[in-house]
Image 1 (cartoon, rainbow, N blue to C red):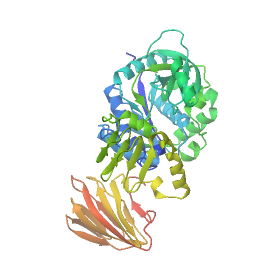
Image 2: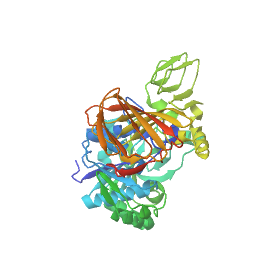
Image 3: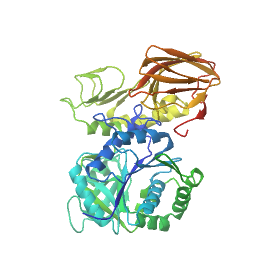
Image 4: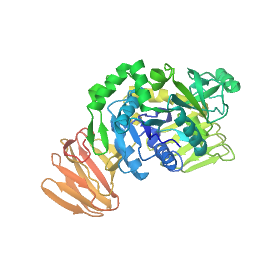
Length: 474
């Protein structure tokens, strides 16, 4: 076993819009419990724990997702991991460069294992074998993980590898070329040739060697990331990069910036049940199916259906006589599409963006560092929310200029700050917060606090918040 330190880097910056309406900008697919009650992010962390490589974990995500990442790490038993926050998405090359600079401050000999947060790897034994082979090669090469293709897939890029030398899975080969996502006929030819692997987006290399190559091939990325890293500030477990410096980094993937240009690229062949869960078809493919080839999640009745993926989030979904459909239900949107055309959901998302619709950004249930709130009803000059505050957590000390709030506790114990007064409320007790009054809601108990909030006023937007104190640095 290699004695060189390994730092796993989990990249969690994506928004997963191809899985709309489940996945949205502020609650993307990597954090959603899509399979067996766990998110892909949690599954990635647990895979590292099973391999004994979670202690030095480094997570890179964007500012908006930081509390979801921290909470899911806590649920996985990791209390104080390093979490680097990207001020904006600049693709994988700048993110990995930041990771390399961070790792070199920890250990000059460190190797980086780059793992996207939203991938599924179900054969852990074969992944461990490929990892061992990659670690040996990574002393001198930048190693990509190439997955042995199971079918003619048009949704992935491919790697053509040299067939010279040792053969078999979990062996390392020279890379002949990277190729873009092919059409169906070309993908079939790749599959039949045996010379191509799926480009998984997972990599392993020495931090020193990566920095050497990014300096040679894209010094502008290195310069911007070094300045952003040097200007960082620590906030609890979060590391905030210098936003102005990071914005100067080109928006480019590590494939284009480094792997396709370097003469040190290699690929390890990974024989595993792998998927990037990048589409509804891929999600359907990852599930166990019933006798009709259907995959279901939630409260679903499928009668005489074939090859469908049906997801119910909030209510019973029943289907009769359907074939090869995707049906995805959430509290505020329902998607129905032929499974083979579900990739076109991106056109729906683009239209929602053009119309500035909330459904592209958030669900009715919005997660916050202290818990969550869910919109129950909205009308002219009023809004009703269900608020959940986690044990020991508190909202900011704040004020609203345009709305008043009425709180009714339905479960747990609440501590209320209202103006100069502080008091507690139990179940079935309530209080009123006039507009212009400083206030705070806290949960001093050991169980979740649930209450109903009724807002009233001329303007009810979420930006009508003036914060005076906030434990989460917002």
